[in-house]
Length: 241
Ligand code: PXP
Image (cartoon, rainbow, N blue to C red; front, side, top):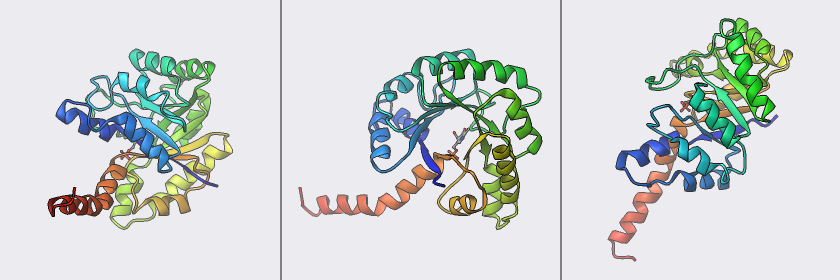
C-alpha cells in the first residue's frame, strides 16, 4: 500500500515572514511541491499567524490540486476558516497558541463530546477529519467514539528514540495502527519524520494512509539543493550571464 506524502509548507511562510515581503512565495512553493510529486499540501495556521496566514489558506485553495490538509486547534476562528476554505482534510490538534510546535495528542476520552460536535460539523460539509493522537490504545479507542475518519499518530517519540538507536518505540506505533485499522479508522502520521527514519517507520507500521512532513523536508531540500545552487552562483561569478 502506497502511503501519501503531504508536504507541510509552514516553514516556507516562516522564511517569507522573516523579510516582510512575499519571497519565498508559498503559492509557487506549493505548486512546485506538487509538480515534484507531493501527494498533498499541509498548512498549520496558528492564531498569531506567525508562519502561515489565514489569507494564505484561501489563496492556496485553488492551487492545491492534490489534497489540501489544514491542521490546527479548532478554536472558532479556525473552524470558520476551514469551513470557508473547504480543504479535503482537516486535522485537529490540541496545541496552545504559544506552543513552538505540537507536542501531544488529544485526550479523546475527556474531550469526546467537544471533538464529536466539531467533527460532525466538518463531516457535514464534506471535509474528511483526522485527530492528532499519541500511540496510546485507550486514546485510539476513544477516537472512534468522536466519529473521526482518521487519526494522525504523533511520531515525536518514535523519531527521538530512533535517533538514539532504539528501534523498539516503533512497536507502539504498529500496535496503535493495527488497532485503529481494526476499528475502522484511517491512519496518518507526523512530526519529526525525516529521510533517516521514514523508511523504518513505513516498514514497521502498517496501514499508513498518509504522512505529513515539514521541518526536516525543508532542511533536507536545502542540504540536497545547496551544491547545485552554489555551483550556479560560482558559474555566474566566473563571468557567465
Ligand atoms: N503533524 C502535526 C499535527 C504538526 O503540528 C506538525 C508540525 O507542524 C507536523 C505533523 C509536521 O511535523 P514536522 O514539521 O516535524 O515534520
